[in-house]
Amino acid sequence: MRFRPCIDIHGGKVKQIVGGSLNDDGVKENFVSDMSAVDFATMYARDGLTGGHIILLDKAGTPEYEADFELARQALNRFPGMWQIGGGINPENAEEFLDAGASHVIVTSYVFDDGQIHFDRIEELKYVTGKNRLVLDLSVRKKDGEYYVVTNRWQNFTKHVLTAEFVNDLSYYCDEFLIHAVDVEGKQAGPDEELLAVLSDARAIITYAGGIGSYEDIDVIKTVAGGRIDFTIGSALDIFGGPLKYKQIVM
View: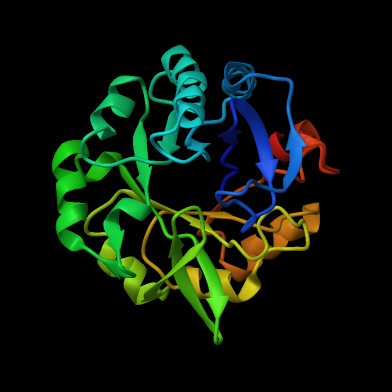
């Protein structure tokens, strides 16, 4: 179990947002930083942190998305092979992100259409990236007592329920998973223990994101998931305006 750093970019700025609030009308922000993506990447590299993720939050194809990518490109170029990157990635542009210095590309929406997963699309991506450079983001929200995969900036429910078996089946196609617990993302009200219990039974490399607001919450993740799941923290860190001391987390 290890801490994975993050850099979320929206509107040309490094931000932390409230999960589930991102849509075409805007977003609810927890924190907007004056530091650039390169500044954060430099800090994380200094502290020996690897395997983190950069997420482009603006809609692909917009000028805002291009501005986000330019900031991300600077960080990728400065520290090649250190960062995974996600947001608007498909087989046509995946190689561009890898060439820019990403260790992996993170993909959600492209592999789903009309609420269904399309394995031919995953195969397309795997052909471009290779299995060992592909991360699937199975961001989930709870509905009717089940955890459903959601796409398109967490707004659209698919027909797929997240289970350990589902993760195991998909692990054939990718190197890792990034799991966002969207309902608790950015709220610092504690991790989703029920979701963690589901994930703990999966045979895969998983990074969990969502709800961490105290040092005790990290212990909860370790206990519930048996130390088998990595974690990331966003808005709860003091570097993003939160109460948890970044330096204490990375010690």
